[in-house]
Each structure stands twice: as structure tokens, then as C-alpha cells.
Length: 464
Ligand SMILES: Cc1cc2nc3c(=O)[nH]c(=O)nc-3n(C[C@H](O)[C@H](O)[C@H](O)COP(=O)(O)OP(=O)(O)OC[C@H]3O[C@@H](n4cnc5c(N)ncnc54)[C@H](O)[C@@H]3O)c2cc1C
Image (cartoon, rainbow, N blue to C red):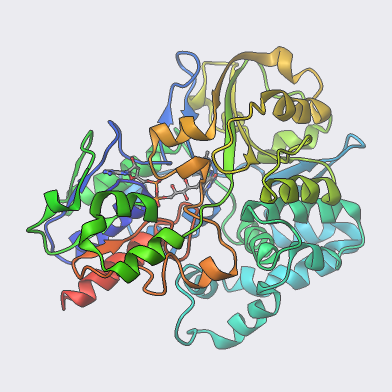
């Protein structure tokens, strides 16, 4: 149920094992938060949800299946990430670690020390971080080393850097956690996103997010799996008679369609699950590339807009405290610079969002654009059309985006360990599994929640 990347990954694992699989998708097109649409003007292709894929390119499961044979082509911008600063310059994270070490100047060695062991061992590292934290790691030394950073806050890790430029860069990386930057685990997000930039890059799919979904669907079709769209499941009872039901849903939705199937204890635990903050998103059709003061920003598909460490931290803390930041941290992607298929010749697209409290209905448009204007004066004059998504509008196009939460639930310490419950993928009904980003390893497009859930189902069916 649900054709997001986790639903499709689960379906593929089951089909690979020889099971007959059908994916029921509520929306008219498959993909969930991995879809591309003409959201502004004809010929401008926008990613409705996710846009940049470090964990997609670095996913052990996606790497194990022949997605390039089914049309997936990753495009790497010359640098994965740029972060403009108040003085009109930008700090750029180079893909090559040695180049990054040199460009980060006095902090280059500290950066290398932080990420190098994991960059060099990504193949061993990725499966360890993209699974539930249970049992012995297969690579105990590597993971012991990572464990030294894992619980630290971004604020603590940033103290290793002398330059405000590197601290700003790290703040942007850590803000992907949706946590306040003084909370435990926020530092681990920053480190993982930094590692992935060097190990696998932060690529975009040629043609947009939909190309990844299409490749997954096509591969599933070769295994005789089927995706049926415009088919919202209203009740688990409608699916009785199947050996296993894998739900690419978050806990609230699972309860809504199947409360009576679950034990009282399991229902209680699902009800206790907490969602994270939401996002306020804008897609732009542009007449020209964004006029960044720092032209280096044009080298990167992703730009973190928010100023120095303290500003980014204040923005994220405000949101965690249920407030709206005056100067929000904005994550921005400019895919058409590197993929001309996204817009008519000479024109461009941009994708930007900021964090807001869950379910917020505050219009953040001015604040979000003021932030871009700070670092790219004249940006508004380039806008030919824009499409604004409040958290509720996002949720109306993908029911998993509860209150605008794009990560399937907050990832604080408790929900990192018990996601969504201690049973992870299993539920109290023995034929029902949950496989969305509300299970380990959580949000992001990697398909690993679906992979692990399906492996668990196969084990229960005695197939693996
Ligand atoms: C604006 C935005 C920006 C993001 N940026 C990035 C990024 O750049 N990089 C990244 O890695 N991640 C990003 N993410 C996060 C990423 O997209 C999600 O973590 C990921 O898509 C989760 O996958 P999923 O399969 O668990 O759920 P989803 O992708 O949300 O898919 C769930 C599917 O289930 C369907 N469904 C729900 N209820 C039912 C029902 N009752 N019956 C049938 N079908 C149902 C939905 O329609 C949907 O298709 C972003 C997300 C958003 C929204």
C-alpha cells in the first residue's frame, strides 16, 4: 500500500523472492514524495517533494538493482552544495574530499578527520546507518568510531571548526535533521550528509524525481509486480486474503484504516508516535538563473540559504519550539542549471522550502523570499510564476506528509530507537507490516525502510 520509494522497494524485494505483488497507490501517479509535475507554467518540470538524492545514490538497495537500465541517470553538479554568506562570498563543499580539505583552509584537516574514515568505507558504512539500531554491527570498529559523534549536537561538533564559514556549512548540513542544533543526534545528521557529499555526491535524476520512481516501477514490472494508481485503501479489511500487507503509511494513517486489527497496546504505542515539524515549500519558474552575489553558488544543485551558524541554529530552534523564524533557514535546489530538460530553453526552475511548526498555516512566502534576496538581490524580478505549498497542501497530495512533516515523524533519541515502536516493521497483526519512513532508518529517499520491512515479512513467511 503506497508507491513511495519505500513502498516500491518493499514490493521489489517481495517480487524478487517470487511473490505475486500489487501496489495500491492513492494518487493518480506513483511516487509519493518522489514525483515531478508541471506545477507552474507549461514546460517547467518541478519536483513536488524530494529533489536531491545523496541517500538515493548511496542506498545499498537501490545500488543492488539495475535502475540505470530502466532510465535512471544521476546528474552531479560540479559541487554538491553551496552556502552563501553575508559578506557576498559562499562556502562551497567540494565533492572530492582532498579538494574540500584544501578549500576549507584552516578547518580542512578537522573536516577530513571527521568524515574521511566513513567516506573511504561508504559501502560498509551505509548499510550500518540505514538499518535499525539492533544487534551487533558488522563493522564494529567503524561504527564505534561513528558512535563517538552520533549522539553529539551540531553545536558541539561545530566547535571543532575555527572558521565561521565552516561552522555555517555544518549548520546547514545538520539542519536536515529537523532538530534544534543543540539537540543530541543533530550532529550525526550533519556528519552523515557531509560524508555522503564526498562518498556518493548529492545528485539529481535527469528529468526529475519521477525518473527514479519510473525506474523502480519499470524494474518491478520485470518481476511481474503491478502498480495500481488512484486506488486509495480505506480499510485493511479490504485486503484480507493476502499473505502479507506492507503499508507505506505513517502511524496515524495505519490506525485510521485498521485500528480494529491491532491490539490495544500496539494501538496505544502508535497513538503516542510524534510527528516532526512541517515544511512550507515554493516552486519557481524563473526567467534566468538565480542572481547569487556569490557566483560560486551556480556550481551547486543545492544551496543552503540562512547565513551563519547562529542564524541557522536560531531558525531551527524557533521551529522546534513551535514558532516561525523571522529569518528561516531555506533549502534551495536549482536543478535546471544542470539538467536542461527541466525548463524551456534559457529558462530555469527553483525549489525551496523552510521548516515551520507541524500543521502551520502561516504564510512564509515573504520571509522565505527575503532570505533568498539577501544573498541573491533581484531574485524576485526573475520569477515568472510560483507555486506555494503550505503543509496542508503538501499533505493533500501525499497523505504521508502529516502536517507537512516530510520525514515520517520526528527523529529524536526515542523515535530513533523505537520507530514507530520497538517492533519497527512488525505490528500486532501478524500479516501487517509498516514500511514507510516512520520505520528505521527514517526519512529520505533510500528505500531501506521498505527493504528491511519486506525482508522481515519474507522471514515470517519462511521464505528467507
Ligand atoms: C518537499 C519535500 C522535500 C524533500 N526533499 C528531499 C530530498 O531532497 N532528498 C531526500 O532524500 N528526501 C527528501 N524528502 C523526503 C522524502 O521524499 C521522503 O522521506 C520519502 O519520500 C519517504 O518515502 P515513503 O515511501 O516512506 O513515503 P512517500 O514518498 O510519502 O509515499 C507514500 C505513498 O503512500 C501513498 N498512500 C498514502 N496513503 C495511502 C492509502 N491509504 N492508500 C494507498 N496509498 C496511500 C501516498 O499517496 C504516497 O504515494 C522530501 C520530502 C518532501 C515532501
